[in-house]
Length: 489
Image (cartoon, rainbow, N blue to C red; front, side, top):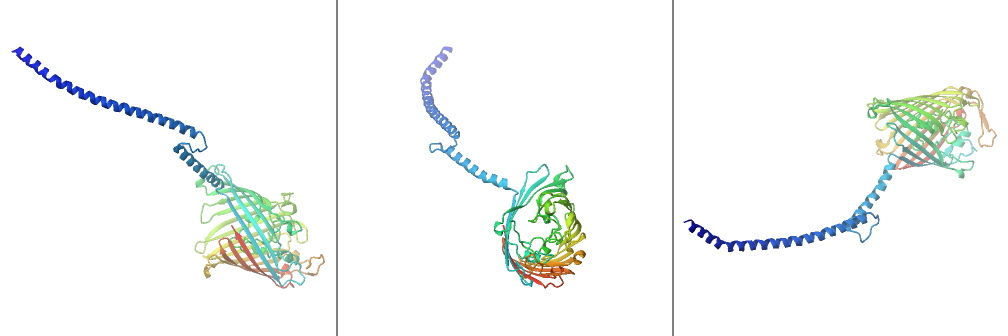
């Protein structure tokens, strides 16, 4: 029985072997075919790897060279082109970054004026033309910790003295009906030159020292260099810029400091000085400030020869108030003293004076101003001055960018000056044409209209009426009619 079963198994096995052999051959054939495909694909991949390696080497060689060649791979060509574009953009960006914070202005003002009512034969009394050009640059410096500081420079050139010479010869206190007139040159007007009128440094130090700057509401400002004193003292929003507001010097600044010569500036209107100021903005609606200063003054002090032998000392307190329903006003009071000032008769004595400057908006388009000056020690040709006026915005008559200005000044002759006879040389030949005994006060009234043509260009017709020039009781009224063109960029 067992033999039968074994025989049957062998027979069955013998019968299935051919089928198994046939199946194995088919599998081997498939494996061989797939192996051939893999070998072919591997060969292709080796070629691609070699190609990529060669291209990579070529890219590396191309990147090592800044030049662009037509034989380079497209990748490096595009990459270099992109780099060049980025570098080209960085250059102006760096230039802009270097110029960030710099402020610059350029202005050209021209005035033509004619006068009537002056004595016959008055030299330089005809129609006069003049111009003045100013360029200012403010350069911020890299901060020192929390301390911000800057440099300021101002260049000026001009020709023509306007009617100022004629009025000065007639003894007028407010001897400059054209405060814009300027010339820095010798005797010949053709030699007019550009001068560096202002060059000063200023540092703003947050207080308290070592505190957190964003929380600081106080600061100490230190300024020194050559400067315009009226940029720091006796400021006024309505009456402080002869290029676009009042032209007569009695209305531009405190007449005692300016026309009266108490400031002791150099021949071009500037002087060296040192200013220390404390500013407090704890109450944003009512910030206040205290300033003290020493300026080189006089014939030698203002031009860096003996700047502090007899300096001009000044102190000013100022604040901003919100009055008339929240409208802004500025209130300043100041005092000055100078050991070697010159009296009207040439005597050198100490002069001490006080002053007030106020401007206050009383309506959306109306701002009033007032100034007062008093020489409490010393004998100048006039010892008191009052100036009052107003500025009206053109929005009231449909010209919102225009401005109408009206102002007047009263200059009281000093007691010493009134006791002396004053001689007048009309034609400038060195021979007195007549003399008078001063009394009363010289008065000045001025009206201007600033007509806005474009954001940079304005025209201003101007009219002035001057009476009792130099406190001369016999002087006729003088009238000055002018036209000013001002271009600012």
